[in-house]
Image 1 (cartoon, rainbow, N blue to C red):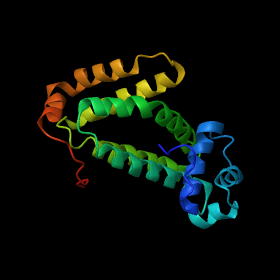
Image 2 (spheres, one colour):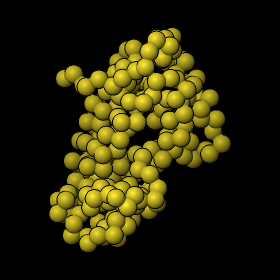
Image 3 (cartoon, helix red, strand yellow):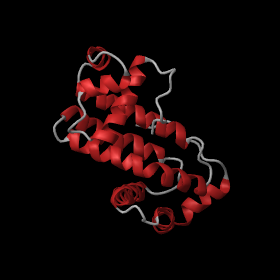
Image 4 (cartoon, rainbow, N blue to C red):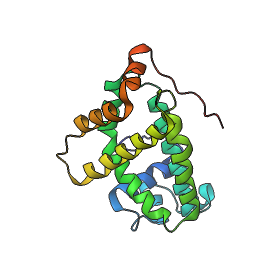
Length: 191
């Protein structure tokens, strides 16, 4: 997710993306307006339309931007403990944002399509370096998403232990062996 507080060196487009995420996380999707996003970004609200064309496209681009950040973050994950650390630290905020994005996607067809693309392409691509069957990747993603949703309402959930158990049960020895061999790297998606 995007760092707190907003870095001073961001360009206008990035400020708007940052502000859109901040508004989603603090206000929820129903109270997140173009004017509020612009106010948080410190820019004129007309710039949202200049850079993105619509509120819907702003959130489509936010989703793509977050996927890009996730991919960068995953490049540096070389051990199972690092993966668990990253998921444990980022999962709650990711889950809160995804709940809001899902709610918005019910009313925004382009956002719904971008969300489907994200799951189909980006999320599966992030797991490509791990020697886990495709169906198992979907089960891991579902399990991680479920734990994320639970952790947003059950703050004392033993998240790390549960993530570790999920990896052990679903990832099996292949996942452990992948971490034992060599650093993993993200390869481009093959379509």
